Image (tube, rainbow, N blue to C red; front, side, top):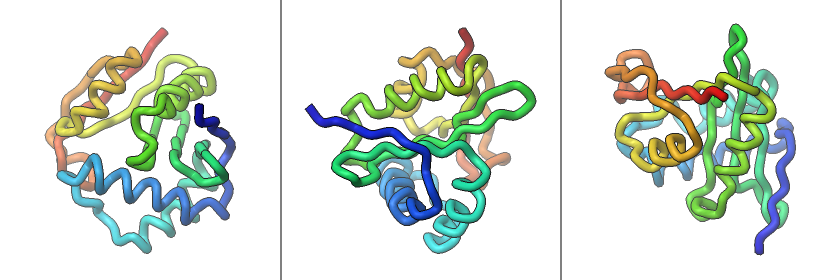
Length: 153
């Protein structure tokens, strides 16, 4: 059985986190073009995401294979980012990250996912998230229709 380590991200993790994010986006969200260059993604992660969000990384054999960014706005918890390296999908890592988010944020928790991302939809619904709003994509950078999900105790 593989063992995983969960810990808070540090700025030195930027490259590894960006690689997980980009490889996951390419594998599972290829229909939604990334709105920024890879360099801009690295800068955003290093200068904004890691310092300003609650970012957890998942390591196996000292290699980052997953990441989750959480925040709280006006009493509502948000899963802003949750990405696994494609080779790490299906190993209960995403489930463990969702469980951590529920403990750390409490209820309610919201997140967005693309309507076309059927794998993510099945995953979040399996973990008790309910669709509360469907949008046409005009409010996200990728211009892809999305769904607002919410989890409540």
